[in-house]
Image (cartoon, rainbow, N blue to C red; front, side):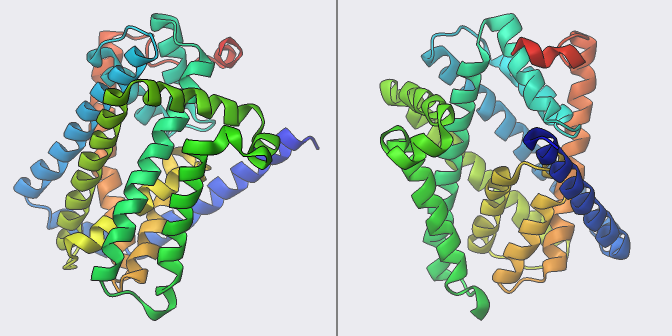
Length: 316
């Protein structure tokens, strides 16, 4: 068995396990989820929905500025559409959404796969660094489970250290260059875009801050719907789990991984883990509803933009 096929087999096994565990848990706690859905008032639903749209619009503008800083002309409207396609198709295996995003950017705007990966990696690391810093700053002001007193700040501190090294000195550390090879050089290429265009870099940081605060407020509302009174500082820390889940992009759209991390982070802050999983599941149901609605309109607007063909991978 080749290394590639072994990785694919492990990915499939983890996906089946994660989705199976999440599905089993949701079925077992279905009354809690149904109760949370029934307790979601129209005002709360509208407020939660608006946070998603604000995040998507901000991301589209941030991405547009980043692509333009890298020398590519693309407008916010098209970026918004491509990002929606990514969100929808990421629920399919093999990161179909990210592949579709890369293909659309190359086909319609001439952004090569190399350029896309470099920018995408740098953006994700900036997001992880920003959210981890904020989460770590909140820890001294909340109560944590005794078993997590040192583990939680240790995990966040480790993420800050690793993402900081990768962003600011990745291509200068011999060990990293030797271990990651071309990936480090791609990341350095993406980071260079933000270094040479400080306004764009600040815009990306600002968008991450606002998106992080919106996600935290959304979780606070949904925790209340689930019957848990979680403070803003607590949900700011828990929201970092969503960013951490990006590091484990194993299952489609992080199914099971994100919910598990939110539940685990909730327990670390002395909040019932069941409430965390139910809250994360409710959030996913709402976002998936809007993603699919926009995706349907996307396909009607341009039927070919949301399609990933089997032979497309060879074009990247």
